[in-house]
Length: 166
Image 1 (cartoon, one colour):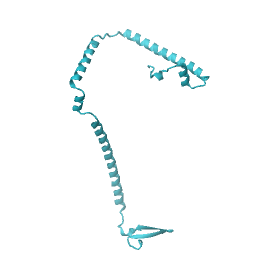
Image 2: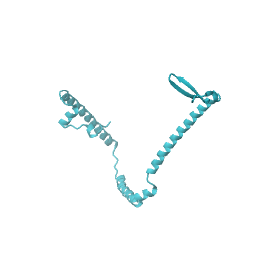
Image 3: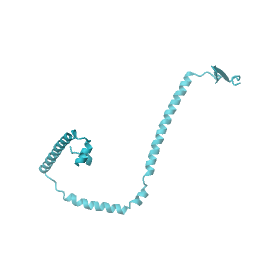
Image 4: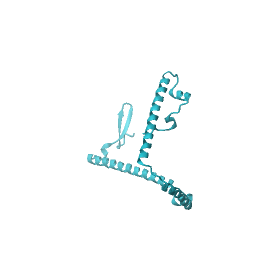
């Protein structure tokens, strides 16, 4: 029935029938025109992708701007007089600190730097010795390193968030 019309053709594949449009009714397609259309589609796709990205960036900027307080809201939230008063109080505390500053001599600075470097060196040496002793104990200890530290009551620099100076 469908195959009897002139616009459709019937193709048999075993027991199945497939109806397809009669291609002879359509004009022949120019290969160059087809390539030009495909190129145009690719260009438009790139353009759309670029515009989508621009829209996403603009929406992100809009969201960031709309989430911030306006000038009027900031003025209401932070009264101008209060900020000026806080600024004056801080400046009044700063003036004596600037005038009372007693510069230390180069010799004193070098002496303090030497003491600091010696203290850091001792810290590293003692930390290494303690780690070696604890590793020796850990060889015969049935539990994990963390449990050993808890049983003995050792707090490491890492546990306390302390970093060794350079």
